[in-house]
Structures are given as C-alpha cells and as structure tokens.
Length: 633
Image 1 (cartoon, rainbow, N blue to C red):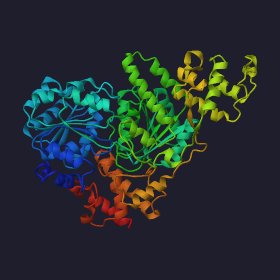
Image 2: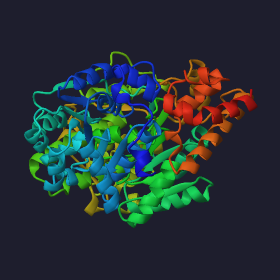
Image 3: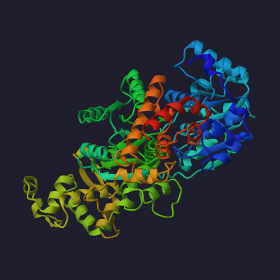
Image 4: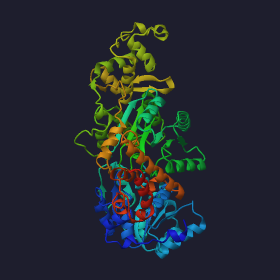
C-alpha cells in the first residue's frame, strides 16, 4: 500500500458526531455491547481506564473509537508484530488511517510513519514497548499531538502472568511525560492478583476499572479422560469441525511435530508451530493459518498471544495447560466472532504426574511455588469436577454464576458423583501394603485379584487387599487412581518408576478421618451435534453470541440451497482476500456472511444494513457479494 493511500481517506470519522456515529459509519454496527459505550465515553472525555474484558468481547473498539473521535494521534502499545499487523490491516480495510512501527519496516517506511505522526496525518500507530521506551521515540512523542495511549495486553506487566514482558514495567513513563493524555489499559486476564499489579505498575491506581463478565457463553467446554488421544482428536474434528480452522495445543515441541504430521496423513491440513522452529517457518505457518480457511495449527504455548483470527472454531488441548489462567486465555482464542466454538481437552494420569513433577522440581522461590501449587490444584479441580465447568471457571476468577450454564459437558451429559471413600481406602491400602513401590498398573492387578507373575513373585497375592476391588473394572480403577493423585492423596515418585506414595491427606482417608467424593467418567463420549448449534444460531439471525457446541461450518445445517450460497460467499471472500494479500476475515466476519445467507439482500441499501458493513466496505465489496447472492437466489 502506498504512503499516499495510507495517509488519506474520503471522510474523517474523527469529525463524526460522537462515538455511535463512528460505530455505525466506520465499523458497521448499530449498537454497543456491554460496557463498551461507558468505557468509550469515559476515555473520550479524557479519563484513564483499566478495562478487563474477555477475548472476543470487543476490547479493541474501546480505544479505536476514541482514537477517531479525539483530536491527535493514538499510540497503541502492542507486544507482538503479528498482532500489530492484523489490527492495522483490519483498520485499513475500514478506511482508518493506521500504521505500525516495528522491525518489519524499512527505514524509509518508518520515517514516513513518523512524519505522519508529527503532521497529524494518522489516527493510530501501533508500537512495541521496547521501541516506545527508547529516548528517540519518546522525543518523537514530544513533537506529536497525542489523543490517547492504549496499553493492549496489559497483563504482560505482571510477573505472575503467563506472558510477562519486562518492558511493560517502563510504560509508566508515558504518564510522567504526558500527564494530560488519557490512558486505557486492556487485558483479558481475569485474576485479581494480576489486575492489582497492572494498576500498580502502570500507575493506574486512580483509573476507573471496567470489569466485564468473563463468561464466554458461545464456548462449549469439554474435558475427557485420555485414552487414545490421537483417535479421540480425529473423531472430534471429523464429527464437529470437518472444514473449520482451529488450534491444537501440545506440551512438547516433538509432540507438536508428530501430531501435525499425523493429522496431515489423515487428510487434515495441519501446520506445526513452536519456538524451536526457524523464525521464517513460524512466520510462514502463522501467515498460512491467518489467511487460510480450515487449517489446523498444532502448537505449543509459543503460539497464541496476538492471534486475532476471529473464526477459530475449536481449541483442543492434548495436554493440559499449567493453570486456569492459561486455559482461559488459550481457549479464548476460539469463537472471537461470538459464534459457537469448542474448547476440548483430554487429560490423564500421566499429565497429572508430569505437571506435579515439573512444579516440585521448579527452582523458583518458595513463595512463587506456593502460588503455582494453588494454580495447579485449581486446574486439576476443574478437570475433575462433576458440576458445571463454567461455574467452576468463573468462580476461580471471582465471578459467580447462579445457575449451571447448560453448555459444557457436565451440563449436557451430567456426570455422576459418588461416595468413593471405601474405594479410595482400598486403593490407598493397596499402595501401602505393597510397600509404596509400585505404579498404577500393578496396584490395579492386585485390587482385581489378577495373579500376574509380579504379584505371585512378590507374594502380593497373599495380601488382604488382593482381589478386594472386583466391583470396579480396570478402567474404573485407573480413574480412581487418577483422581486420588489429582486430589493430592497420592504422589508419584518418577525416580521410582512411577511408584505411588500416600500423602498426609491420603493417610487421613485410610484411617477413616476424611471422606472422598469421586466422579464417574462417562463410559461413552457423547457429542452434541454441531448442526444443532448452527441451526439455533442461524435461526435467530446469527448475532454475536451462541449456545451450541460449535458453528462448525454450514454443511448439513442450512438448507441445501443456503448451504450452496454460504460456500459461494466464502469463496468470494477468499478470492477478494487473496487479491489483496489479507486474511479473509478482514473482508467480512463469518457472522456477516451468515446474515447475508439469512437476509439475502438484493440491493446496496439493504446490504448496508448488515452488521459489519460500514461505508468503506459497502463501497468496496457490496457489488461482489450482491452478484453472488443474485446468482443463488
């Protein structure tokens, strides 16, 4: 894009009559959601704000609209080049004068952006914290008329957070040098400890805090016992997401590459992403994922922050994350457009063992380890809960939900909980009577009375516990031991070949001083059809929230004619995106295409009323999409 194109526009949204006019004319929506209007008006008036809003809740509008209403240049502090690029690309599609300053620009391009800042020929400039705190850039700010400082991904300031960036600690310099310029800090991290640190480290203790609900009602949460994880994943994808884009998280780099290769061998287009890959490979794979349709990214946690793709329809974990904060952030990358998405995870005994081992072997200070231990306990409790998962998740972040959500696995297929005290005592007794030197496999054989060679050689077939557990199957006993380890009643000695040891809490149960409640793992992995969710969503006009498992694509959900139209509209969008070298979603979101399917506008006037169609996109794309609709109506 030329410099002339970048720093010019036909109309000036900044001169519009208020925030709502900008929302309508530039972004193509008729009304704000949630607290957006209050936040935007607060910032436009020149006040500081700390905004805590879930991913997909519309945080970006909270600074983008004030940037177009207030006079001057808005500086957006953003931690990743990919995030800056995506945001700027989307804004330019709307006709907004936006640019970024980072290492991907040549010297000449950077000078053009800097000149535009000083001349007031640009509305938003995205910059990394490392560049912002340099003396050269601070001097540039002194020569620029400033409208606003937006500190995106503000949780990066917290050393307790999962994306800590030390440069964020220096951002208080903005207020010191420009005390009259309002600041807005934004994050999707919900825990109180991180919120307090953001306010303290960024000198925002006097800022008004806007705390939204962290519920993501369009996401369906599901956690399954890990059996054959690859086959479980493939079945999940084939049934729910045959043509959707999504992310599969794995703990290790080697596993990422193996799973990506295996998915490709099964006919699923998949790309690997981890920190060990060359930078050019990571960048190329991320670009393919962002600009493509239906690609699965298999990744470690190195892939995540800054991924602005709104139509990620699933986030799958083949290994659990380290905390509920990380889980919330990672699953929140699904369904950013408000349409249904799946958060799917498999979890097993080996995962519990590995996570506890990593925590105990940490060289961090005891204070930090104590915090990490409590975070792990919360995650394990979430995995093992027999009650509503959404209630458990929100409760962890200090938000209460009065009724079960009806949109997680434990609500859709209620899990039976039972008094497992006697069974737990049998399991603990088996571990104790065999000398606390054996792993789950052998202990289950003892409980079932299997006269294996090991059992007879060690004379364990003579123990009182031998054969005392025949009321449960091998699979059920494995579940019991997993829950006892997760609950801290047993620990696993990895140096002792996985031998199980009783903890103090386990001893108390064995002595009858403490009761144990267990959950029964579902025998059959039931799935709610993606088509049901699609039908409900489309039936009420698309919109920004969903209640189903996943949108998953229209096939089999829409009428045959509408299904053809849906795919034709997607093909049109993809062609336009490829011509411009931009991601398809910056042309229109899936939600806008679905509105086209339902409403079938036949003229520009009706097309202009679709959500997401502002004046610029009406001029650019109406004719192309109207042609498609006419051909299929």
